[in-house]
Length: 309
Image (tube, rainbow, N blue to C red; front, side):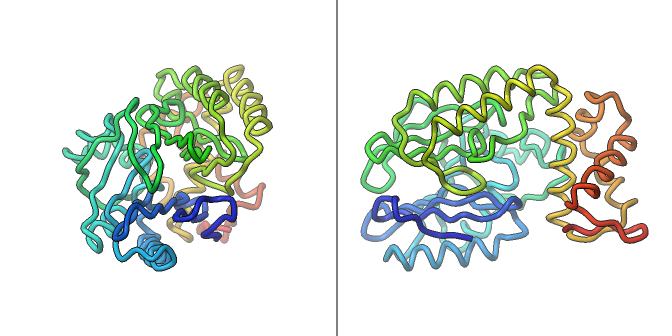
């Protein structure tokens, strides 16, 4: 876990986490406060509190005044409630998700459909695509970022040539294209996002997962190649989603009876739709995904119990 980069402007910290909790970006705003972008998964909320406290101390700021979420998948906002309780910070979410949070619609927020957890929080301000906001000493552009998630945003700072890319672009690719699992368009939107990013003047990308990176052209080329393969065979997206989401549940649970996990997966509508796309029942798709993950060394089976590796 890394919490700083030499190429970042003074007053910023990039906190690289793991695949259960998203990365975080901390930016000193003024003499008193700072802004945090994303907060990780609820299981790691205590660690998020510790990391933010350390970051604030390093930046010489006594409090967190704002918390921005690029999107509301559970791995990006699971620490919101804990951070709000400690710092009484404002929470800013993408405009398209503001009402979902107010109603705490766990289906619209994806927690019900993915069988993931998130502690309820309140959102105060909408992040509106097309607008700009001051973070630190510079203006950042808010861009709608559909593809991985229809309601996501990304943040671009021309002055510092920085891009907070969320799950639209990682050094190793990009996130599951979830809208396609529901029969909605997502591949075309992801393509448009890659084209948009290509038009930015970016020196450093701060992604939602994995390390920060600077070779944007090469990363975009690899991402386009992967996206082309998914568009040619959409079942690849569904198969990948099944494995990723089951592995994600195991990162949370660590150890569980296979029957218990099977019941949890069977009640998750997103996983069920992914199973339909590959022409299997949810039970058959679950068995297939387990076999694949065990073969790959991502999980281990001991009798009727499954362990995360």
